[in-house]
Length: 274
Image (cartoon, rainbow, N blue to C red; front, side, top):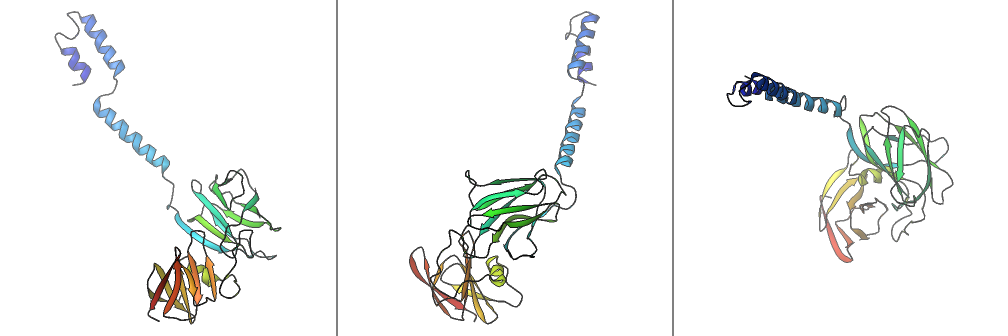
């Protein structure tokens, strides 16, 4: 029995006249046309519909963060940035020393399909925030760096299975914020160092045990590769690479002891497993 029927059958709900009871019953039905079970069913249907609208069709994209060595030579293929509608990608521009390289301008090849904005109000920071507005519309991006005559060209590819959440674009050469190398040989761009900096050891690398500071170490191609946030002082390293978050990778000759600096204090790292 519905609520309105129960009220209508009550002896004292609407007075003693049939017209009064009929009018009140009709008002209740107009104000509450659905019974509690129907309301519950309707809410469940609404929730399922909202979930179906927000769910992306197919397999959810895989989030990735990577570093890319940009080849500025004529004829070189531009790096590909993987995007997805509804996901933001940060592009960080660095020089060969790992220091930020300010962006002074940019231009989109398909401005209706992408949204882009700098991270600083004056538009001269080293990071751009990029987002695809369409699911499959492709395009490209030209970025002008401070003091660099050649623009950095990037290919924008939405609708990929993997999405680049953050991409560190390392440009060959010294930017306006470059730091002077105090130790080691002249710095060159190395894909091997880039892999270690990303925490991905090349095939054949042997993992070592490091004591004395948070660090990772490997033996690869006869050399010691150290990934850490401390600054290596001795022995002199062969090559190095840094990331914006302060992580460093050093290529050194095999040695069981490394002297380093951490927050201004001298520390000693011991290497096990050489």
